[in-house]
Image (cartoon, rainbow, N blue to C red):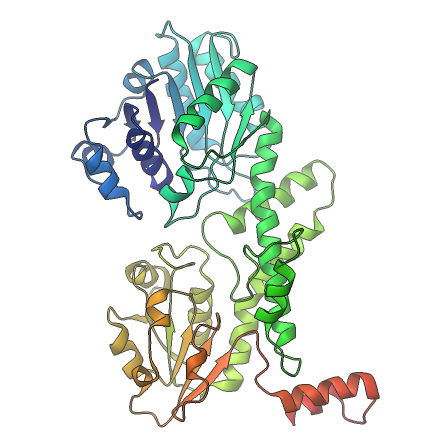
Amino acid sequence: MQISVIGLGKLGASMAACFAHRGFKVIGVDISHKVVDAINNASAPVQETGLNEMIKANRDRLKATLSHEEAVLNSDISFVIVPTPSDERGAFSLQYVSWAYKEIGRALAKKKNYHNVVLTSTVLPGSTRQVLIPILEKESGKKAGKDFGVCYSPEFIALGSVIENFLNPDFTLIGELDERSGSELEKLYAMVVENKAPSARMSIEMAELTKIAVNTFVTTKITFANMLAEICENIPGGDVDVVTRALGLDSRIGHKYLKGGLGYGGPCFPRDNIALSFIAKQLGVQAKLAEVTDSMNRSIPNRVTEKLKEILRPNSTVAILGLAYKPFSHVTEESQSLYIAEALSKAGYRVIGYDPLAGEMALQELHGHIVVLDNLKECLNQAEAVLIATPHPEFEKLEAEDFKNQYRKVTVIDFWRMMKKLENEDHINYIAFGKSNDDTANTKRLKQIWLGTKEKPSEAVKS
């Protein structure tokens, strides 16, 4: 079987490289000359962990072209991975994938053999059958399910670990138009994945729903842990890690994504949550859980910023360590730390930042609201307060000595509780998000609730 991959972004280029790595001949398609040239020169067109090395190692089995026709005519199956950006309604736009399907359909018109077309881009229920299949049939003059196959098969990957996630998935999701197309795709996955992951085969519409349902469920779990973290901050001896470790032992819950910290971000989780709310409303179904999850997540930067204003000295220099939406990524889209940086800057603080990969992207995103430094030590030397915003291993390696500078005492706010070794240092005011930092005040708060003391809650907090 020969494979074509249409759209060579982070996921598409990584998938193409993985197929070649597993021994298949692969031809990639992209509208960018720069991307095509990079692949043909055995170089990664995008930044992704391990991608450059994998492309170089498999250069004899991987090439790229600008022509959809060339790719389709020289392959047996095509994976379509083009952008489906959110529109003003919160749905996913089919503009780019529709254009790709027109090109594929025209190529299918010239092909005698059966060909399987697999959509990997995230779409909403009904998109494939109601919009995209008719395009293929119109442009090719052929019948889906008879002359060519159609599947919807999105991936569950995280930027920064795309290759690992693709080769070792929890499961492969296959939405099939018919038995033949689904069986062929399942056989291919069995030869590609390295961990013998099971396949979940279903109708196209059910697969479209499953994709966004998985991501929305994960965001709900993240938000629940973040809520617990804030509650723990207000209970004497509170520690969210103690609570979530116990919760994760329950087989119905599990430990994955159950860690209180800053909220979720990135190009997938926020928009998939909104998209599920959209399709539910269109179908006359309430989606309050998804809506509340999104609302709570978006409120975190403002709530955190207000707390920081109570802790930080006015107009001080605040360093934010971790500017991407997650560690090991240069992507800053929907990054919680950038929202906090912008809010602090507008409140009059001088904000400086450092990220091992995302510094340049953060600088572009914030348009001058932040000074981005390319040296971690230099960043710490200027800071009166330090926010550890992402759990990157580089930050965990820091020692108490690294925080010594011209200030008598530096405040370190650790959103991921990585730096417990800083707790008893004289020159550091260490504050861990999700833990009680004032047991006396928190004890008074509980007394007021249960013993009916005369102090009002607000007075107990102040004391």
